[in-house]
Image 1: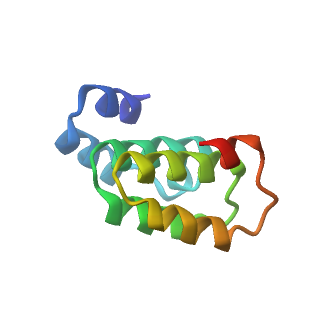
Image 2 (image 1 turned 60 degrees about the vertical axis):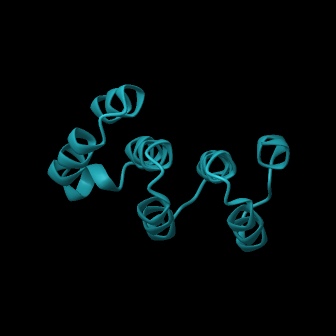
Length: 98
């Protein structure tokens, strides 16, 4: 929830400090990964979002939707098309309509 609070309040520095304090186990939690993706994308930190996303082993449709929406919001739609082509799971209605 602290990462989400940093996203909402646009407190990038604090969000980075919190992210650095996360344990290895926490960093592999899908809810925390999604919160971090949202945080990076809202902060316009596309490089860290892409790095985190590429490190996630079991990407869900929700993770793809978060990335698609964030990349479109940040005007990098071409990356959405690249990710869509790389999807190893069946897209759902949210992936297709985001």
